[in-house]
Amino acid sequence: MSWSRFLAILIKEFRQVRRDRLTFGMMVGVPIIQLLLFGFAINSDPKHLPAAIVVADQSEFSRSFVAGLENSEYFRITHRLQSEAEGDALLATGQVQFVLVVPPDFSRKLMRGERPAMLLAADASDPAATGNAIAALSGIGQRAVGRELYGPLASLRPAEAPFEVRVQRRFNPEGLTSYNVVPGLIGVILTMTMVMMTSLAMTREA
Image 1 (cartoon, rainbow, N blue to C red):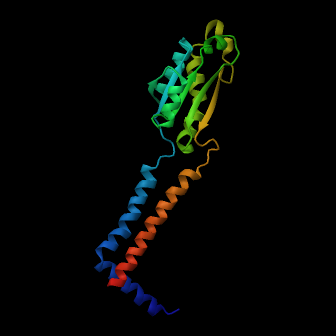
Image 2 (tube, one colour):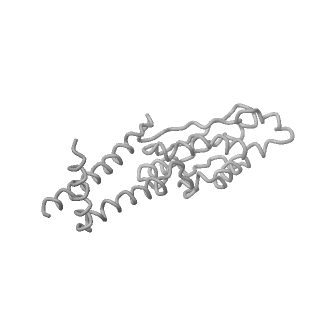
């Protein structure tokens, strides 16, 4: 390896970049844009996700649970529906991220200690956007409903939640993150390839 040749090529490239303002702007601008996107725009813990609810049990327990969801940072109630079919339509069109269905016998089973179940249908096409919200749901519900379990119902406040949340992950039941990661990586690779090809074309023209 000849250091004199290496230095000559290095000086020549710096001179080329100084003459070619477009290539210099792309070399500096593209990394800055990527830094801003990956550092600030891409959020691995999104909050205030749109959700719809179907509450067939109008009791203090279901009202406390819905209030707990609204007070949390993960869920934002945008629709109050009458049927589960309406929620499925909103999920299919991407208008909401979650649909919570509270059954009509929720409070009756809860007071009997039968640990009732409610359904949470989630749009899992982006697992990173729904995973943290689903994980926080049980804790939110346990705190919200637990406030109503006092006096004769205090015995229904065990260590675990007195109800069950059954999650249905729609559109991506396996929770594969490759559906989101791979297209993003392809976009980054194509962007860098475009910068390199533009730089080579400008060098040849010079």
